[in-house]
Image 1: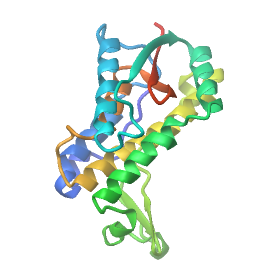
Image 2: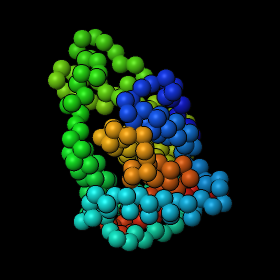
Image 3: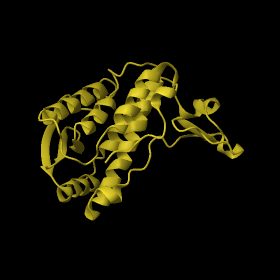
Length: 226
């Protein structure tokens, strides 16, 4: 299941971060969601990518990201995927908000980057104007918002009925990670993705593995069985 972009990233300009944001869009659109890994080395790659993510994040928030991250591999079908979703939803630790959101916010503040400062670079919906596909932001009066950057995936047509809700739940968080990955580059004002801790997460999904954080230092990397 892939989501084709309705624009060509090569035709969009994003300032000093243009090349890196084009790469993020292109690689994100190429992910085939909820299918078994194709590469026999994908499991080892996913574990390396998660350690890379943690190491990059720890540079900025050592109190949140541990010195050592334990990764555990897990395989199964939608029943097992949904069970992991239920488990992380019930626990007090929330990786997406307690770690990733805090990391993104900390970095943007440190680089003096904010959504509100993008007001002159986007159309105001109150005027009746419409953004182009691929425009990063829109404005409603003085309020600046992220534009819709990726199309909705036809989850109902591509996964079993009992997998629809867990798949949509997971993709909702993935979309936020995509925005955070792009925001990191904008705040850096750079094409260099080497320090971006969200980019390894994108690559982990591309490898066919789905991270579920059990606690600060334990990550389950789930993959679908063949």
